[in-house]
Length: 310
Ligand code: BDR
Ligand code: CA
Image (cartoon, rainbow, N blue to C red; front, top):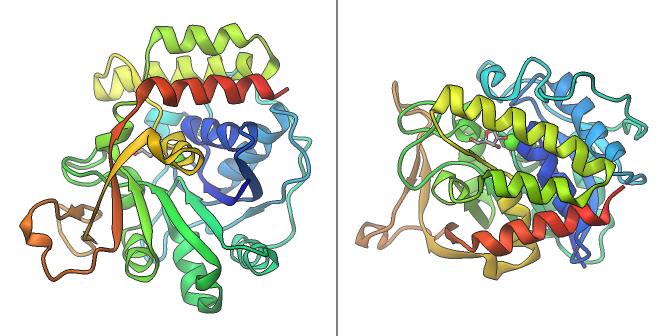
């Protein structure tokens, strides 16, 4: 199996990214680290431990990372994810998965250096921890196989007209990462193909285990807030698209090109400038941008993973 590290801000779709990764035999999840994003670091860290606990997965270290972006203030996405970043269930269970005493950067660095082969990093939140790792521990960069990030978009954003939430939350971090390491980007242009329709909810529900019951509560809440806030009839299950690509490259088409992150714009900070035309000539082809999703294969992977869990 491919060794991976998940860096996340759960968050409804982050929980499904975790479940897809731990529930699919093609991946070996070596660590889970957390960052402030959808909620405060306290909430996202608790929620990551809850996601693993509900799934009955013990033994993967979980460590907390950055509570604030590199140079901006954190803004929780309360309208989409709720006050505790995991709205839906009436109460959240106490996690049985412990918190590793290391910080996220140390856990990621230790995990990379301990691995016999390079490890894939899968960030599904603001890239604050990954940028901090690259800056503080540059010697680990050769141990990163690739970075598959949920963030950005080929065209429009969701939090501002041109910025997607994870890119907007910490543009300086995304800029550091995209300049330093070979990356893949699953942005809104592909994640908005992963729509949680009623049929998807019914398929998850039909699995009939504790993970699916908890997951259905998350999906229903997520669809409700997406309908209210974005007027979308079905919510996009953004984050697991990255994990699906790590499992099976054929789940998404990709275009290799140059992507530059806007860090200065008064209106456009966090915009991912994806060069799709001839403009790319002479620029560093630093990112593979995911374009077209095999939607059926994607949701088959999700349902299969949930079946493997508690
Ligand atoms: C991204 O922002 C968060 O709301 C989701 O978890 C996802 O990572 C989508 O813009
Ligand atoms: Ca996320």
